[in-house]
Length: 292
Image 1 (tube, rainbow, N blue to C red):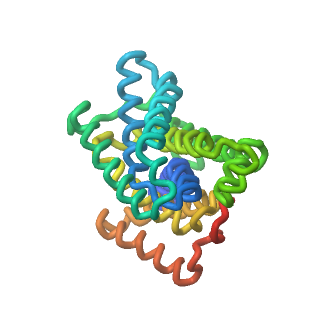
Image 2: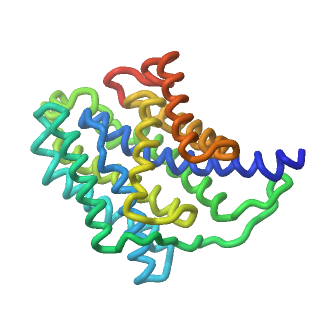
Image 3: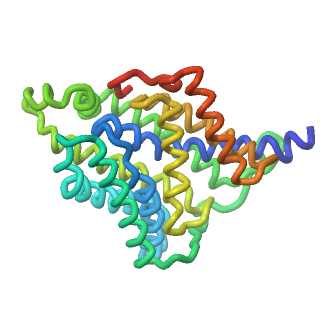
């Protein structure tokens, strides 16, 4: 019982918290894949830019809460410019062109961050300090805030896509952009705003996790691999599946670190993905050509 409370339960909660934030990152990746049919390799670097944008804003305002609003907006603007300048001309070409472009963008963003901020590891102090008693143990207040905030955001995103006209238009663009264009909807604008929103989600995840992990130019590489696994496990194009898969991967990674070194944990995570895909080739909830 002591081992459960002292070791297993905290790790389980760490996994749920990490999974909720990973869900934000993976949701943006899922939506972009639904729109463009391409896995956005630069999505991890948008996550990284969110953390660095937060550091820059905090350096000026000395407020994490201001950064929580400003950093996603800054990265959303970068995402919008990126979509218009580099990805829009490739929409009618083979998906491989977009894949190569996003890979190049990832390298450019990573090197740009290194030139601007240096290669040293940085840390953002938690805006909420201390711990509170929970289930027979003490748990950091900031991590509980991170879980609650991420959960509310995920709920808000689901409501946006299922209950608002704008969200329904995005889902329609995924299924038949040409039909939507024929109805008079400005489809390129929909793509740009959606890409910007996905970039903002990645930035939010980066900033929210910055007080938990360290910030450095390569931080997006590991996260994008996990996000790819989440999107594949959840089912390509399934937003609900991405959230479920993010929680599964977050909890699995957190618990496995108790018994394995990081390299073996990474292998085990890939093993989980392989087993799931053998049983369910489309992932947990995937259906072809559907964003749900």
